[in-house]
Image 1 (spheres, rainbow, N blue to C red):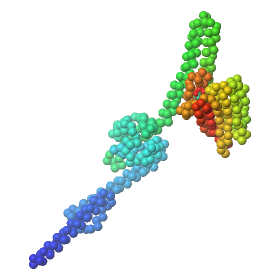
Image 2: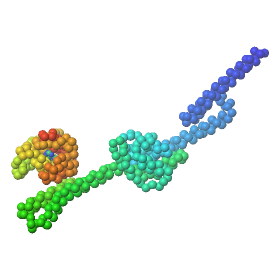
Image 3: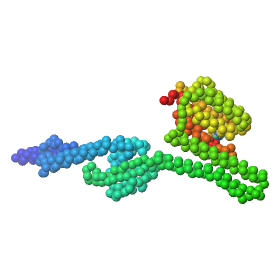
Image 4: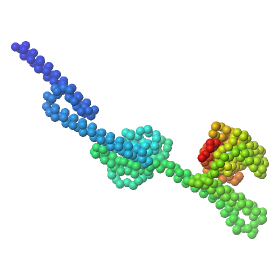
Length: 423
Ligand code: ADP
């Protein structure tokens, strides 16, 4: 009897252990279902013996289904938004309550090219600007804020952006997000800076000869009766020299502003390069200061024709030869010429064996008013604009220009021009 009871007890214990093991397994499956948002499919009915188990699994499955639907809805909404805003010219940004980026359209990605995909990154990683992050926080909190401009340092680059924003509910409606429309103001700000610097430089350049002229005229007005003829002559000649400089600066400024205007007035026609270069060389040899130098033209017939504005191209060589005459000593050798460097390209140059230019200045000499030796340039009537005019004209012909020099061994200004026919 006792053996029978022991067997029954053992069998019951085994049965209970098996039920507990299967229930544990069902609980594990339920946990996994919740984690992976997959509906719970009970493989083993043994768990049904748990009190309230069928009701619990039913509720969990319903929650999982609702949650999945909401997630799909949310992704659908973001995908729809992305599709609508993706190609807008304005940059659009959506951030959630923790500053995670949920939408960054193409225009926004172009403003921050450093980060490949902005979505799911924290805004702080992309936009390191405390004022902008404060603006985001305040917008999300619903404060009505006007459109505002921010300076943003991204690695070594500075961007200027103008942002306006609005709070939006998150797709599940449980938190507050924020949407921003952003304009890239970088080019505009850089242009404004260039323009400001240019106006400041131009005013300074004009003021110097003007103050000298004014000073000398005042002295003449006050003292012309008592002044020696020799002094008067010296004063008048100084006034004449500085008014010529003033005129030269204004003339060059007008040329530059015309070149930059909507109607630069260039007339393209076939130009015979060997004839043009020989003609310029002959002209310069006949000039009084040209006679002190050796002027050589190396213009093989193969150079042929380019489609160009002959007058502007002559101005390019004129500016370069004027410089070569100004900055080299008497007896120096000046050479102008060219060669065919490609099927559709020629390389032209003006070189000299004068003092040349230090390497550090080479990249800057095409900037407006940049001079390596200010005193020498002014003394020789330079305006500091000659090479920027050259660069403008070359670029308007679809070419590029650069300088090569070894200090003490001369300077060569080279340019490549396309030979292709223009319509
Ligand atoms: P500038 O009117 O002063 O000559 P440019 O724009 O023509 O202005 O030239 C810029 C500067 O480049 C000059 O001030 C001068 O310092 C330097 N430069 C130009 N050409 C030569 C040259 N052939 N040899 C040495 N320096 C030159």
